[in-house]
Amino acid sequence: MVEHEQREKKAVALSSVLAALVLVTLKTVVGLSTHSLGVLSEAAHSGLDLVAAGITYFSVRVSDKPADADHQYGHGKIENLSAFLETGLLLLTCAWIVWEAVRRLFYREVHVEPSVWAFGVMAISIVIDRFRSQALDRVARKYGSQALEADALHFRTDVWSSSVVILGLALVLAAERWEIGWLRAADPLAALVVAGIVISISARLGRRTVAVLLDEAPAGLRAAVEEAAHSVEGVLGVERVRTRRAGNRDFIDVTITVSRTLPFERVHGISDEVEAAVARRVPRADVVVHMEPRAGSAESLFDAIRAVAHRHTLSIHDLSAHEIGEAGGHRRLVVDLHLEVDAGLSLRAAHEIATAFEEEVRRELPEIDDINTHIEAPAATIAAGDPLDSLARALHVHFAELCREIPELRDFHDLKVRRVEGHVVLSCHCVVAGDLRVTRVHDLTSEIELRIRERFPQLYRIVIHTEPPEAR
Image (cartoon, rainbow, N blue to C red; front, side):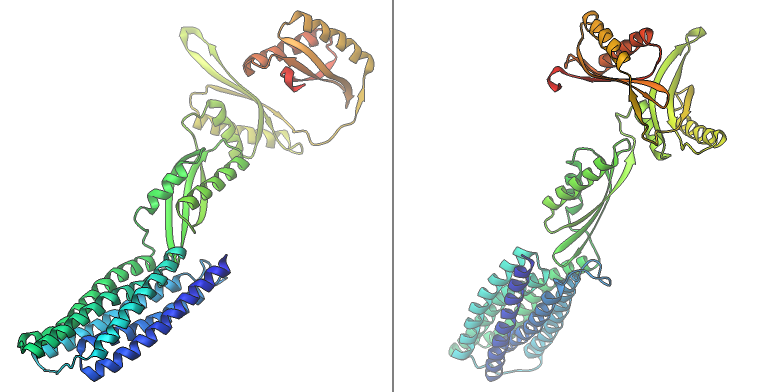
């Protein structure tokens, strides 16, 4: 695909060089033979087009080279620089045309000899310019090439300027035939009109080129990027958008905010979705997304505490909060949690970590009156376990009784009892109604665990996995 684009751009740029070479030769010969400033101005214009077409051909050959260590955004800016140089050459040519036209109007009389060759050359110029501008414009729009667009603009304006020159020659011919003296000024006036057209087009092209070279953001691009980013689920806001254009590509840096409680993989997924959304709105865009964690409007007290733990690279579990009523109607908010620290730390070092964590939680959540932190080491080894068959059979009988006594407990399976590092551990799968809320299921498993411990106090840990009937 890239190779096809390069071939097509080079082919149309080279054809423009050949067309400009033919036109500048014909116009120069006819302009010198007829002494027509209009034709000579067109020859100068076409000569400039030849230079511009050469610059364009060079730029499209270089601009598609991939990025390297010295040009990390690629070589696309060469197209914008090419268009800037073309604009400068156009304006210099226009200055000469205006100067010569004023001389012929007020200080120097030059006899213009309209001939069939002059009219023929200008007609040929119109035909070539029209087809060249259409071919260049088609490829420029297809691949977003500013250099080819500038070339197309030159050839398109040549159609109108050549038409003005033909009109000037026709009026000079009429002046000679019917001896109307003032019509002899039509040729330099036609040259001034040509210069005016070129200056107008050059100014417009120049403004666009300078805007790109100065990294001016195109109108509406920022709004389009923000709208695309906001359309992605999980994006809380867009803090900054920066854009720059090089050749036919837009380089976009966007900073978005996401919930600080999201896991890293989800945050990365949101980043990919934002890149894709922006690329759909801005074709050929190179998008870089930076994420900032923020507290969302729906963030709960528990989410905020977990966010503080993540900030300290700490793991917590068994997080709970409750209010305690006191005399006078005041209620205290108390938080309990288990904090995991490195098993090799001393109690003093672990306590310092817990204290720093608690202080930051209090600063962020001043409504918390008290924090109770249980310090423990995370599981770091895989322990061997020995099955306890007789205890497992007794537990099977007990679970069958529980199923009869608790209507919401429909069945159980995969009951296992084993001794691990001197402790007796029970694990079991319990089947409950699938439409129960998670809070009710948690209360139900707590009730089951309590009743099991009453009967079998030797159990050190009980792990109950709950599942709906269709999952079994």
